[in-house]
Length: 279
Image (tube, rainbow, N blue to C red; front, side, top):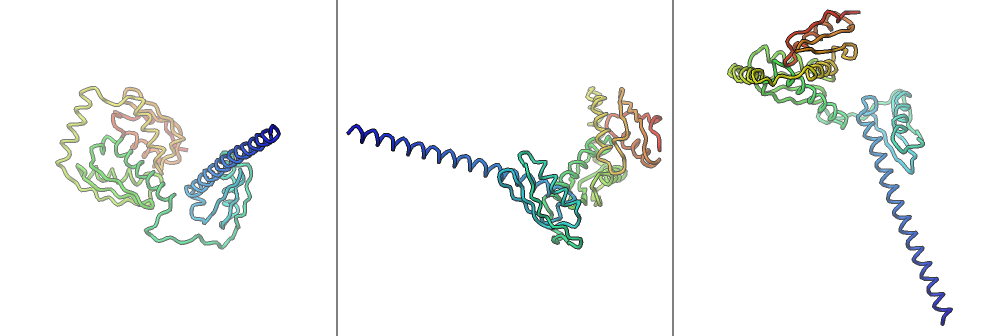
């Protein structure tokens, strides 16, 4: 009787241990599956955002830290880029790069109305940049403007207080990185001028003007957002509303645009550009 009880207890213990081990293994497998899926998504999303890879039909699968890449690209440099992106994802230890390089490869065509995930992100970034530039400008901050971007084409809708303001809004949008065209549908409404001027004057009178640090940050930002100014080559400082620019630019046209963009920022009183020279 004692022996039977002992054997039963031993069998029960083994069964419980096996069940516990099986549960732990299942949990580990589920956790690994989640990790694999996360890494696959991260790699695929980066491909979709890359202007060099988004047009290609690439596939990614990940298993226990090993990424397998497949699909076709036109150049070997794109194949290598795909591998380096995969290796850059945390937890990826090895890459089986099965991507085929085909010189005459033509990416799958999409309809004119269809945008890829990367296109949508690019357009949203452009829209945000244009809105920021209009908001920072002393001459366009009062605009009632709707900004929309599709495939790099920016549409401006709403009202402007003058033709000069409308034209400036169009130039600011056109000078934004990634913009391919601007459809300026702003309607000139002179009645808006008094409201905007009164609001700006009230802010200045109440001492709510922007700080020098804010001005410097916005000038640097607008240079970086510009497609025609090399912001990294221009140093910016502000003292009591006076912006000083220094460095070297490629041409007189770029220098003139940099000065205009800085002068256009809210609360900038003047721009000192003596130290900004051309190559």
